[in-house]
Image (cartoon, rainbow, N blue to C red; front, side, top):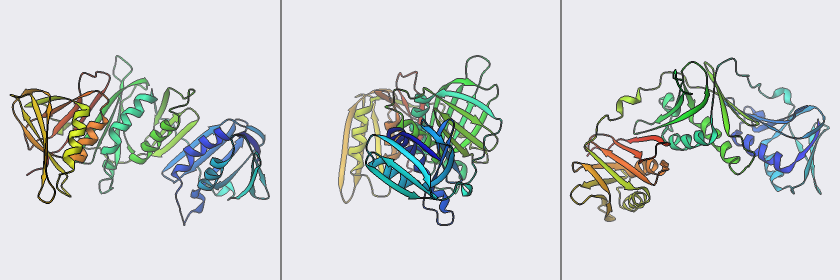
Amino acid sequence: MKLSCTKENLHQGLAITSHISTKNVNLPILNNVLLKADGGGLKLISTNLEIAITCSIRGKVEQQGEYTVPSKLFFDYVNLCPDERVDIDLVDNALSVSCGSSKTKINGIVSTEFPLVPPASDGQSYTVSAANFSRALSQTLFSAATNESRPELSGVFLSFNNPVSGKGSLTLAATDSYRLSEAVIKLSEASDDQKDVIVPQRTLSELNRVFSVFKDDVEAPELVAVVVTDNQVVFRYGGVEITSRTLEGPYPDYKQIIPEKTQTQVIIEKQDLQKAIKTASLFSKTGLFDIYLKTNVGEQSLVTSANDVSRGENSVTLASMIDGADNEIALNFRYLLDGVNAIRAEKVVCSMIDKASPCVITPFESPEEKYQYIVMPIRQ
């Protein structure tokens, strides 16, 4: 194997692929990234047996071949190289790397021991705007469960819907049973059939991280392709391909917990509400994280408050537009703040029924942002 490429391209490729490598004592090869040089350039491949990431970068290949080296070591080394051409050569079962006046040899493992990344068999194909997909992921990922006592809740539910008219939509939903996020975005292209799939949260976090790597790149692709099979999902974004297993089992019918009616609707400036929640959180009870929202229809105001015996109490009165009856609810401030932070609109809508029912947070007059966040109350 012998090739040359720019430091910038190699660094970007390693930034994308080296992230999922972890210290694996039983399978040291999983700590490595596979370098595969062929007629099309250089491919960097890494896997943890659940997720595989392939990144193709431009390069001049003089001799085809493949080899694996420790991904973090290689990434850290390339990161310190000057912004010049990088020459890579496989010499005596070690990777020789030269860049400017810097030369090194990195010991690795032959590629025959690297796990095969299974290609995605025929499945349903969809295309969606990368910017919209990234926004929807940022609005839902944090609501997925962090433990795997119920494996399906540790993933994000993706529902690809292609109606008779129009190009269809993609619904993303995540819940840990304490709060629920749902975002809906348009599809650019879709297969004829509807498809539902549960994708591990870590897979989608990696995809969103790849989007962030390209966010300042003027040549970044505008679309991401998604291929869904019975037990696999593949995301293709420019020269990057992420392959992942899917989670088995049915996803809970989360629609039934979304309130269909409301008693009180509060429209409020997002920044004001964020600051008030953060202020009240300083006086919430340790471990309970409780703050109170109380409406005053007559004065058209929302009061956020919290009190703790050891620290004291706080209340903030916010001007707002309120429709309906006076109401009060206790919420976990961390969950509430996550939902408010996820909204892009300048104003948010808080819809309440009573102190025992879920509170719904949505953007105000933002038709392009189809998002709702439901947080369960703290029962007193």
